[in-house]
Image 1 (spheres, rainbow, N blue to C red):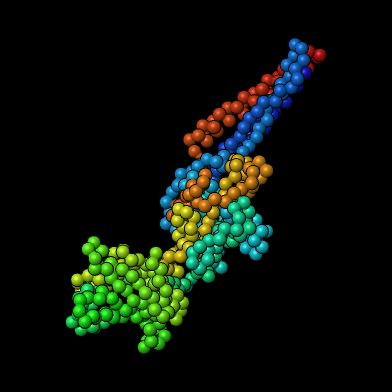
Image 2: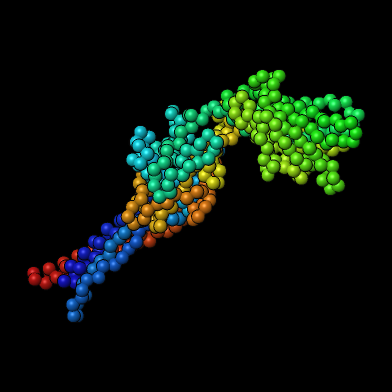
Length: 434
């Protein structure tokens, strides 16, 4: 009967518009929620098989979804571990249950932004309980990626174990000039000493001494020096290594290294221009320059001038701050100025972002509709860069929601009017038999 189907269609119209109103309410309520993705509805009509000369109203049905693919605006904050993504991609997080679970058993959730701060155990988490996860870095800052299509290898980010660090010296650069007059006949043969500070494996300050001893010939110039290296952390009277350097005095190459002959305790790579020596705490590479190159160790007609002597490493440092760069590298910054990568935060991507299942606290989980995830390095492939000191705003547009609210209210009232009209018509039909 047509009246009956009209009544059913009106009832269904009330129901779907009530659902629409619920999504609008949710959007407006979360207009200031960072990382919130706007909810929306999709109305589709239902068509029943029609008979000759009659029409039966099928009604309407509704489907709700989260517009997860939409991008919210980025806002600047004062917290270095407020993280957002400039583009596509999602941060891996877990729940408190994931802290004690095995690597492959941790609940994997995804989020687009988060205000992370360390808890009492040093784990980076949001106030709502999302724990940031990443791949841990080795002591030298390298990251071994166990796999990009699995969460195995991801660990909750914990910074307690990085409160203090010692950065031992591994590279020294000798940028200096030694006087050409010292290797000419009649010179006094006095040597030149160069102390270089380095840091051992415990962060203690030590001294590596380089003594440049000229070879003085009877006539002419030898352009030859013997360099003895002494480690003050060991026996300061016995060199740990030595090498001979001959300088070129030919036109166009004057002052550059001609050849290097390593002695006991040293090796030399003529391609890289590096002399390798072993101090008490381990090996150190000393860059002096390759044959024919200028810029580091030179012999020119000038004074002894160590103008470019550098060494890496740092003493014991106390953790000062945690920052993330655009490549997703989470760096620990110490009060000595030393920076070290402690975690890499990958970004997850799925074929159908809007197919993810929405959960509490602006998190999402992989579903059959979304497809499998893949972890990309931030700033590569289809994913954007990770941005510290920022959060992603809600994608709710208040003006649009209020406009939808007016339209929904009118649609609801219209469906209610259909029910009222059908009721009146049924009443008239009832009155016919009285």
